[in-house]
Image (cartoon, rainbow over all chains, first blue to last red; front, side, top):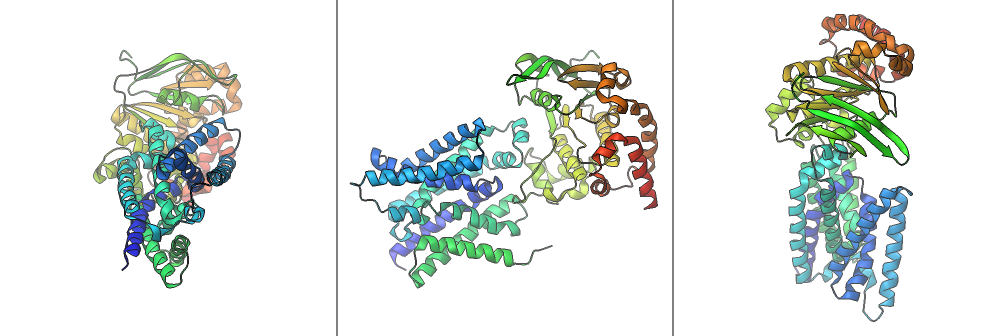
Length: 261
Length: 278
């Protein structure tokens, strides 16, 4: 296998192993659109990274956290519904990001690769970042898993039982931000959410417990990465969309399997 | 009682915007005591519970808890998203590190042993309440706080649940703070009733409260059902309390809340008779 293929495959697998469990929590907490909004704001992070020289991935994490914080504050005002707020932030940050990148015209920016990813351009440094960052996110997720589940089941109950609700939520948001920064290279910011929620949704029907669903979701994600990469080699199509299409195919297949008793 | 109370709220006031939610409310719960908070919707019952649990801070007044007080809280409802696969055993283990044997034991105590491996979303209203009670009990609480524990449970199931709560108090000696918008069913098993409508209308023994003019004014003609209830209750539970599976009648009767509220006594008799024939 060619080097760039192997690197792409390893990067995709590393990412899918993390987006599987994390995506389950997003699905359980009904936060798919929240993830979408954060990932759209990532383009603004790219611009920030260029502008300040702190690097695109740090820029993305910072912008995502800032957006999540702003969203929390806006939601507490209760003047507009969450979906409206998310829609406003999602599209305005995406537009602002594109404008910022255009203004920074001197920097050569391949916009398409940010939007849809370029898995075959993954370098050694990217690979280390994905596996290192991924391991960090998984460790953090394992650490707050129980309180996070408690919070997901019932927030008031969790608070009564002494779960530090705000800190757990902040940790969860941080994990999403990091994953978006890592996944941009693989599937692009427009498709990150797909890698989070589709494998989780496909795993749901076969899972009896939350942990089982998380593991299954990771495996389905790995399968989608392998299938998408393979398909894009066979018929020369963009790899990021091919991975998402493969995940969607696995989801459809999961719905077709007859339900167990 | 000479022992200090487990929980004591003194002269609590709470305002939301310019609206007074609670005005100069006091209550205390001692070990082994069942205190019931009743009042119409919007009376501030849930706010008072949240204050007692420490989820809200009062604008005025103090809340004192016994040192190291362990509270077992049973929420009004729980709606776990259907996307989250959650068997009852896993749900219980989220809150306390208990072995499966301990969980089975507590579920047995509340009459929900059969539910241990079922998905929590598939439980009936009564079964879910029992599981939530089991969850609270697994914490080995000194004080049980039960917020509308019989919502979405038909009259027959309500009686069983109140029986159960009384039995748990007797066995474990814990204090119980019970919230209900319901009247007579609750009051029969209660030591102290606090009738709340933003302020404390009246409080005391159930018999005394039921004769209090403010209570009568608040609840009108329902108020006199208490005495009648005492009789029919003892009789019926001994008769077929453990024969009827709690889950079965809930669905059939859960839509009749308005009717049940008006004629609890009669509703109960009907359910009872119907079961015998069926």
